[in-house]
View 1: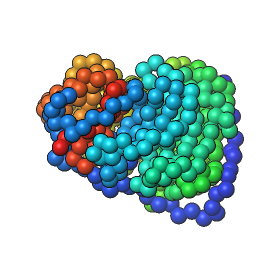
View 2: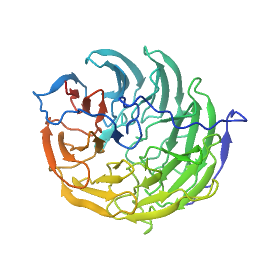
View 3: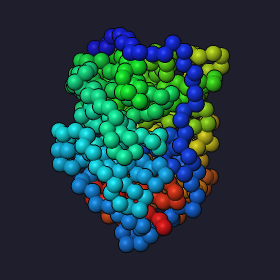
Length: 421
């Protein structure tokens, strides 16, 4: 069934100067995919080898598994945590001390591998915003004071996504942007929402129509930000399409089909779109992975398809540095592709055995890939595949690694680990 398009607007400034996406200091990890939002970090001197009893600065006990990646700004880490039915936001000092916990919501449930604590927080260093799988969107100050709270399910209808909501919020131009792409268990429309960072009031809300069948409307992706012509577009991937949106109004500027060329009714999308080197990499469910380049001329012309590949991932989001694209499959198969044309640099190569849900991290000339069993394989980045180390913490891991301040942070089922000196 085609979901029809409607537009709902909140209070929007009549004039908006489009700024570049807010960037954290190079050594921080303020979003679930790092300072550049593409799985890369400029950090050097990172640990190469570690184990449960070696090269670990500290480990903080956790009450259970979760997919939320820790975020880092300066001396502070933030993490969404599920403790039974409770969902909480934790603030942790870089020394490993738990500074505070804040209640987000009740009603957490398991959803296959994960639960409703999967979305990662986002921070600007002064405040932290967090979205739960139950639909609570909240803002906190540095000391844990709650600034505002929204209940998106109460306002806009129940989430109808099969395996639980897990998209992370994005910051842009003083707004917190969240997407809700669903359809398997609801006929309510999918939408994109921007709320004011300071007040929590709606700036705009737009519905995102799709004719995707059955489970294909469901997407677990996080929006990307595409710099273009001095402005920035919000990119949403899933429900059979990639769309670009105006940050001032949410209006859809362009739409590219091709994520589901066979009309597979189970073609839900998990891996998020990635921007690097002016290109947009949009995975689907393994095949195809689309690579788009902004077209010439003024926006809102749709990006053109530069190339595509059937060597895409399912769950892990690729890492890209502008020169090369690094793809990790659920079975631990690695590919390195030239970003410009998709030429295979190396691959297929296999990391440590097991299943993979965490996304790869590219830093210090290395690619770090972590299995659900908690083993991280470190391979050389670049033109030659070499395994440099295999490090096994032996604890179930869904969350992607975070890199900051010379350390690697790994969130497992039972601990938050600080790896390095």
